[in-house]
Image (cartoon, rainbow, N blue to C red; front, side):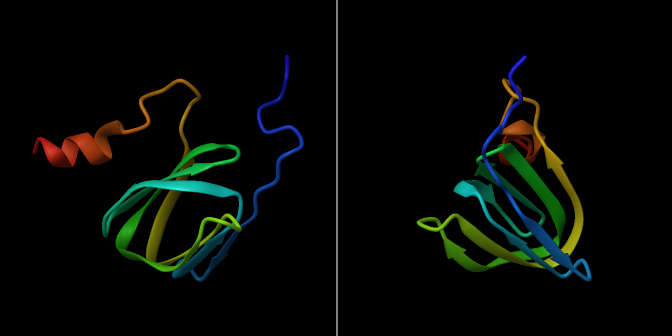
Length: 93
């Protein structure tokens, strides 16, 4: 079995649940004040919280900084529905 992300690196720095700095980000798929969906080198990452907003974005270097109250970070299963409940659920509410 080949490990996902072998040879790839990602760093997450969370300071007091108020500032999240990430490396290894390829794209920002969707975002609002309660949820971000990022495509990273290690898979899709969902960030949930309150009053979330982008402080810094540099996709050339793969860096993103998000401010706000961070409640959870979770990687989506490979091959799963990347748009998930967050984006489509909010669209069809």
